[in-house]
Amino acid sequence: MALKPPDAEYVLREERTVHSLLFMGDKLLAGTEDGVVSEWNLKTFRKEETVLSAGTSACMALKLLNNTLITQERKGNVNLWMPRESCWSVSKFVHLDYYGFSKIDVAEDGGGIVICPKKNSGVEMYSLKSHSKIMSFEKDDNTLGEVMALKVIHVRQEPYLLVAYESGVLHMWDFRIQRVVSYLKDENCLTAVDFSEVTMSGLYGSVSNYVVFFNIDNNCCLVRTQTKEIVNPGINSIKIRPDNRIVALGCWDGRIRLFSCKSYKLLAVLTEHSAEINDICFSTGLPVHFMAAGGKDRKISLWNIYNTSL
Picture 1 (cartoon, one colour):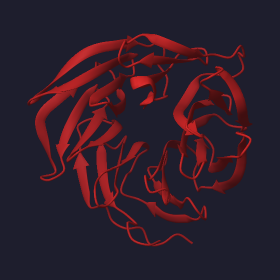
Picture 2 (spheres, helix red, strand yellow):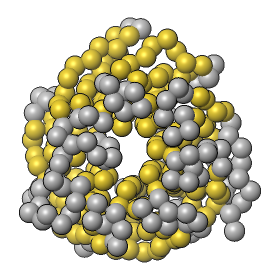
Picture 3 (tube, rainbow, N blue to C red):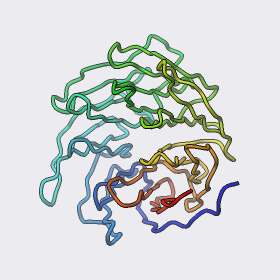
Picture 4 (cartoon, helix red, strand yellow):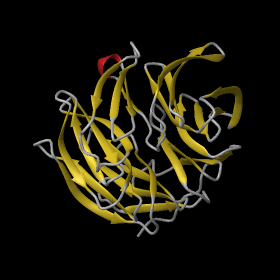
């Protein structure tokens, strides 16, 4: 049985639907429906005057790589932002021919890479330094549907890419040979995926009412380990906490469901939000792992949750 849900430490209110979140030092960035990126001060819990504009449509993703902020706009623009004293300078990075729900991902390999979804089930890799495309991941299979989620992972220090598709397939691509080396198949459209390189385990969610846990075995194969039902269908976001103890699911019913990564048990169902959750993130570099969640109800909830023994 889940424990009694704790209360949120703080609730911040935006003017538009929240699509993306990112902790950055003592700031929290929030990307919203109109392309605006708000900057919240986590000492005063007030908005700073500094506001970025990722574009004219929803800011789907916020990533930080090599001191560069990367924003992804729903209409396809991916921009780079560099801090300049009290402001940010922006440069155009790439325009995607993709207008779906998948967020970009980043990794430090090769001096910095940005992984971007494209139409017709494709994925492209760009160099942060040169801004040029350096690799494509495409399979001649018109049954896969659109790319729904991406995650760069490392197995024995070698880079791989997890790609979740509309058809319910989860592919594991090997960077070195640009081929799929393992896959899982689900009956429903996949919507979110996350993975821990420490435990070599991850999980994916879909439009249905369950979450699937999996691991990568010694033969570098994806192996399904556990399926857990949730009350209502639909998962938009999955985030494993940096200490690999809990995982948070941001669901269509506005609930944040917390599971134990070790036992797969449901720990709590958080009920602060009244509409679907679009993104969840955890802080790093702080004494405790704070969690932030935002969604369609225009609220951002901040949690200090289960930072003692479970």
